[in-house]
Image (cartoon, rainbow over all chains, first blue to last red; front, top):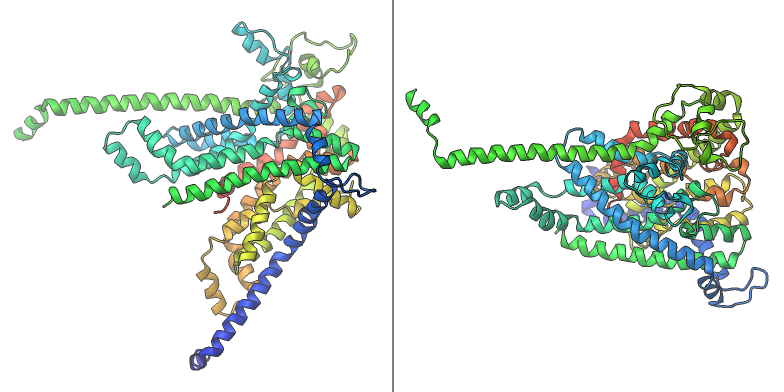
Length: 306
Length: 318
């Protein structure tokens, strides 16, 4: 009390005190931030500048500035082109499937079916299981004489050597979907449950059909989530190397030779120039994708939530 | 009484139609629910099959495995000694339940347990210290916000979204510079400072109303007290979510050890499992099963936290 009375008498001094305290608080908050900041600077940001530097010199000893030569070399590299094309092809197929199927799963669980929480657990469980644990069974399933071929044989189809032909991409897409659908589904479930109930009720009272409700209400409310899930799936699709490596090792069939394989080979040759240039090209692509993410979020943030 | 009976009996045609319609609607709803449930069940079977099969096959004896799956894993002709079926017989349930795989793994060949231990020792410090670093950093981001902090946070988001193809190159260069290449530190340090946990915790902490902290400040609490007694308890759920997400991610790691640890002695089980060769297939399923036990336990214990954590990721800026 006494303190307050004093402060009222000298409002100017109180103001000073407040700004002083805020200044001190800001300083302390930077202190809390500093361990992480130093680590991120040291392990990610600063070396990235070194990467940029390496990408523009001819070799680490000579340090002769060659500007874009390394990029041209990488971009015209056959292996790099193939890796980029394969990665792109994979993403073009896997991402739309990942979005549509996970939306389907979420809608199914949104419908009042029995055992909903159990189903959610089941759909989410692949996310928890390490890929390394299931590749054995995957190899058994997709073997030339395996059960998948037996199954398609029932329909009169010819046997396919799944992992050692251009069909390997199909196997990888399936594995990717198996692993990632649960994650996307959770995002969609959260979005579906945030659609205001009264809007849906009004629509039903106005005798809107299910299809109309889906297209005109749900999709509209989900649009920002759909874009978010699409972009996250795209980013996750770049990580599919893990599955491919575990399934087929360092030298997979041509059609599933991905960007990370290229990087691994470059690492084993310790070709810093190639590595740096490839990493920067990749980073540029990512910046475009992330930019799209932010733009859509800004756009839809205003549109839907308001 | 009579009046009421009459009113029940005599229905206007419109009422009758409405009743019929609603019954029809109910029946249709029932059929629809049944169909969707069946559909969901089919999906559930597909999702669970690889996991369940791995577990059930871990109870096969080694000879049964080489008989059924010999073709899949044989790299060369094994000679006429063992029987290998001409087809790959997928077994849902082994002919004879045996624990021989587990006995071999647990008591006779310690190298698998050693690799398992490798996984543990690589992952656990990352989970603990990334959480600690991130808790502080997220408090720093959430309090006294300013333009500079927003920019730095933006950089964190971009870093978080970068794939390994990009981040592993800087990590490698620093590890080389610090002379920690081929030691566990090369995995630990980039993991500990990974921006992921910072991002998620900051998003959560920004939802704590400013007034709560201001009230504490007026009551004379210092920053440390606010952090320790207000923010951390309020973030307990988020900390659990983040811990689970970090754990799954690193338990599954493949890229980092491949590049940063050239000594395969230190590789975690996740990398090692893919290199299991012909002679060891007899116990591979047991190893795979043992490897999924920790994340599955975490999952069963913390599914709700996991779901909450994923939901928080919905929307980057929050």
